[in-house]
Length: 332
Ligand code: ATP
Ligand code: LTN
Image 1: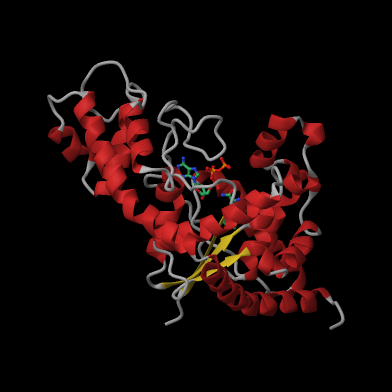
Image 2: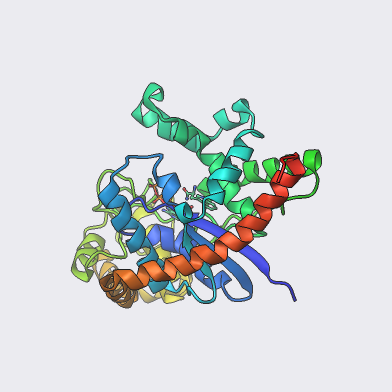
């Protein structure tokens, strides 16, 4: 039986991934390894479309690799690699840029949001061409499934459109990825501001539960999470966004249903409930953080693992790129 191929990427834009990244995307990366051919990429070139800090980029790329392995991505079963070590991404990215319309690229909401933040005039061209590089990431590996959160829906649609356009115009070249947006636990909110999503780039880290943070710090963040009026532990996203977010986190990590948790905490106050959530989070993350720190102690070994992944990725990428060039009429 031929296994379906999974591809996904994450930017090394902070020292630590957070619980939103894990529950919204990375947990599914790990689960999909079973029965699928997984390609998981640390997209460092995409990270260059934001602030560029050479020492931080290196540190965060290695830390991302360590965290992914610690979370359960197996470098043996899956292909775990760094985007810049496979130059085919840039090469196919250019072909995608030559296929995409200026109008459709201008409609990408991630570009509109991010460029509006720093002022449209100073937004860089790389931020604009970001979705075409993302399409190249996916299409190079002929991926069937792309597990990402809801915020990436538009980029996946663009990828499907570009692949279809290429295939129709120049002959069958790319697999068109299925729509595969993760729904369950797909949105974890900031602990201090439960109306905004937990985000690596949010202004303050007080509401962000980081995988690499100390148990004490995460414990403190949960105990001081914003709660709602009343004192009943009930799931109600409108009236009780803070408590609902904590219930979602507890349930996703402990495997207990929200209803079971509501009964367990009936008659008890928010204080007791927060202690229980903190215990679940801290105990879940403790071995993951320890494993990541252990991997980071031997940087050479980590770099070697990533080289092995990049070599595997290059084999597949070469085949696709050659086919695309050939169908375009370039002379080999
Ligand atoms: P940034 O704030 O720098 O954009 P981010 O925290 O939003 O970063 P990304 O690197 O953009 O994280 O996302 C990595 C993956 O995690 C994506 O698939 C995204 O959909 C998912 N994700 C990010 N934040 C959350 C969240 N709060 N809840 C659920 N999934 C999330
Ligand atoms: N844009 C994505 C990261 C990303 C990605 C990809 C995800 C880059 N290339 C290919 C899936 C497939 C993000 O911001 N989360």
